[in-house]
Each structure stands twice: as structure tokens, then as C-alpha cells.
Image 1: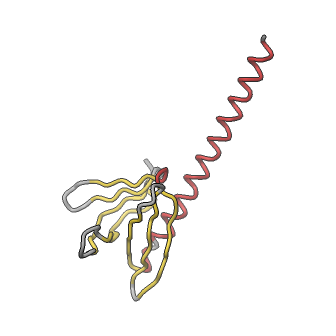
Image 2: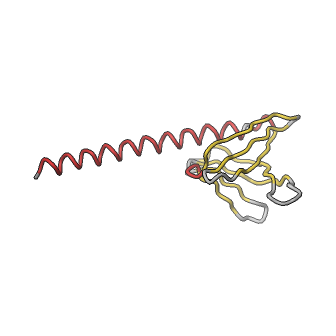
Image 3: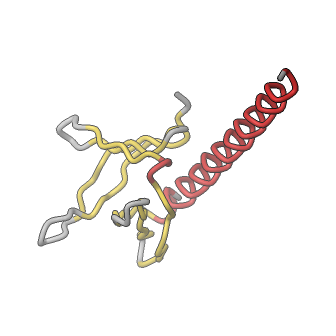
Length: 121
């Protein structure tokens, strides 16, 4: 599995206080893997991501939101020079492009198979 980026990223907790928690994160071909200090790994797959939204620079941080296909929003922040938001966006677009190409190839193969089957009758 190819690793594009690895390091610390802060995630806003879902709780009432919405505290920022540091997570060790690894960005791979399939998506973004964030592990808590407990060793528990949380995976966000590109297949389930809709977009990276609300990118805002404040002070030394960049704040951004990953919007999942089911509508859930996950808030992150990182130091401005880390560029996590840009890297996640880039890899997500490339992943979706690969999926689109695979879908087109799959459709073409089915069409070719159908035409071969109809010719043989």
C-alpha cells in the first residue's frame, strides 16, 4: 500500500466540548487512516468521501471539513505548512478518477461481451 503522507492531524471530537484531539494519520491510496494514541485505527475510505470543504486559514492552522457520502462531517485542523487538506483533496480526486476509468472499462467489457454473445446466436 502506497503512503502519500504521514504525520499528526487534529480532529475535532464529536462530544459536547468539541475538543481537538491529535491523531497519527496515514494517507494511502485507498484513503485516510487515523489512529488514536490507544492504537485504535479509524479509516476514512475515499469511496465514502464526498468532498473536502470549508478550508479556512486562521493563525497558524488550516481548518477543513471532510464531508462523507452519508452527510457526516468531520472537522480537522493542521499547521498551515503541513498541507493535509490539499493532499487529501488531490488523492481523493485521483481515487475517484481511477474509479471512473474502471467503471468505463467495465461497461465497455460488458458491451463487448454482449455484442459477442449476440453475434454467436
